[in-house]
Image (cartoon, rainbow, N blue to C red; front, side, top):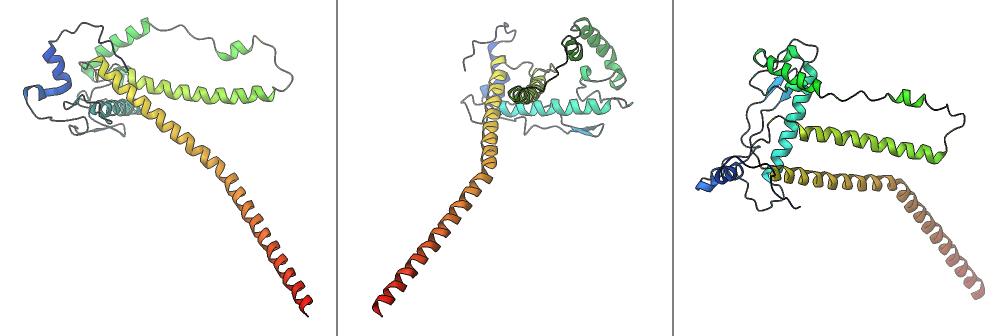
Length: 262
């Protein structure tokens, strides 16, 4: 991967920017924490365990470790965001209020679930989002109504292609959900250089691709297992029949030899 740097001019000094990656190690201090060791107490919100906001690591060695502390931080941020989404959905329709000191996800909460001191901020955010709303998409049923109904069955190839497209659609939906967790504007990556975040996301995607390839390979092995077992059983049966035929031949040869000698 090649990163050309952050196009946004940095307001902090070089030392301050480096400290956001290396922590106090520039001043000779030992590494203190990662997002897995500096873990605050979680909170139960609407029956959903929501962890504390992950803490940025300060012990990255910048040597290209296989499991970089920034990759771990990226995974922890995604989990934190996913649990916040689950809790926000569980709060809907209730009178429970999200704790003000637990980073309320204002965009996901109903107004009555927002802490009192943050409701003005919630209203302003909703108004800004409404002003940039996208136009409504034409419903699929309205598009289908423009074409005459088909009287004959679809060809088998079209049906197979539709099934493949359905699978691709499900995968795209999963990826869109993953991207939503990556692009949430909650300040978790504020102050971190953009190339660090891009690196963590890139490494995570490569890791997931490798995992999916291994899972697909295992599924293929499992699908082929019945055929493989059937072939092995057939080979064993043929070997058994050949052995029986050979034994009969030997017995016949011995019987012929005995008759000649008598």
